[in-house]
Amino acid sequence: MAGFGLPNFGQLTEAFKKAQQIQQNAQKLQEELEVMEIEGANNDNRVKICLSGNQKPLRVKIDPSLLSEETTIIEEAILDAMKSAHEISTSTMKDRMEDLTGGFKLNLPGMGDET
Image (cartoon, rainbow, N blue to C red; front, side, top):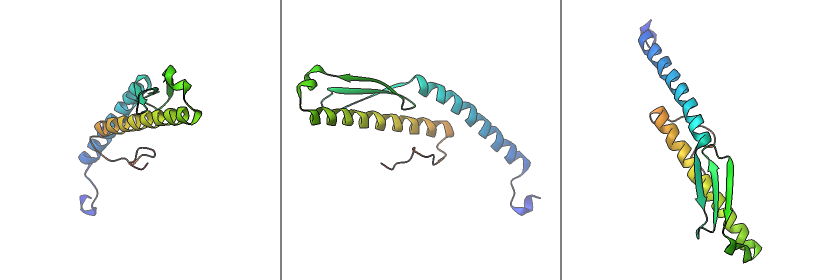
């Protein structure tokens, strides 16, 4: 049967074991990401956004000195901090998934290099 280009039974068994191990490790990673805290900040560190490893918003810290600025400056600072936290979180998830899969590219939605 191996003449039809199908992997032999040993290869299939090994592939299934690898898939099970990845699934178990993915569950552990999910749990780690849930409790992980990732902080992003705007360029002058007057706004800090904290997300979980799963990108769940946790906290916002705003330096009181920023509150005396114009609304557009405050909004830009918050947006910059959000972008920073999101970028760090996405990069962290991507790196952890690559570690988990041994570098095997899964092309998961939201995990690509597109911005």
